[in-house]
Image (cartoon, rainbow, N blue to C red):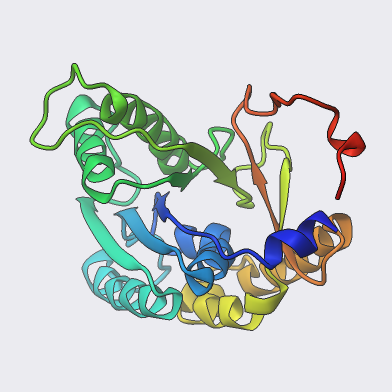
Length: 246
C-alpha cells in the first residue's frame, strides 16, 4: 500500500551519481536515475575515469574514445547531464585536489541526493571514489571552506548495489523500477562491456537477474536495492507508523 501511494506522487529534486568508471553509474544506478527522471527529477552523472584500461585488445586511448561515446549515449538514454573527469583508469588519486574538485561539483550541481560506490569493493578505483565522495560531501556542506561557489548540503546519500562492492553492503531500500526496466536494459546495452565480449563477466545477465531477485524480495516485478548510510535508519515520529491511519 505504501509503494502504491508513493507511486501516485511525483518526485522532485536533483540526483548526482558518481561512478569510478564509465559503466559503473549505468549498471548500479541507471534504473534509479531513469525512474526519477521519468518522474520529474533531474540528474547528473559523473565518471571519475573512463575505464579505458579494461579492454583485452584495444589500446587505452582508442578504448577511451569508445567509452566516451558510450557515456554520451547512455546519458542521453537516461536523460542525465554527463560529466567526465580526467583521471586514468586504475590510477585514480585520493588527494585533496580531487576531493575539492568533487566538492566544487557538488556545490555546482546542488544535488538533493548523491549515489556512489560503497567502500567494500574489490576494485581500488571504487574504494577511492567512495573516500573522495565522502570527504567532498563534507567539504561542500561546510560554509567555512571558502570556494568559488557557496556551500551546499545534500539531503541524503545512498550506495547502489554493484557486484564489485558487496563486502559489508546491505539492502536497506527496495525501489520499484518495473516501469523503466526495458529502458534500463537499453542503457546497459549502450555499453559494449555490458553487451559482452570485452569481459568474461556477464553484466547484462547479472543485472537483469538481479532486478528479478530484488523484485521478489521487495514485492515488485523488478526492483533495485540501495544501502543507506549507518545512522540513517533512525526514525523520528510522534506515533508508531503501523498505528497511523493509511
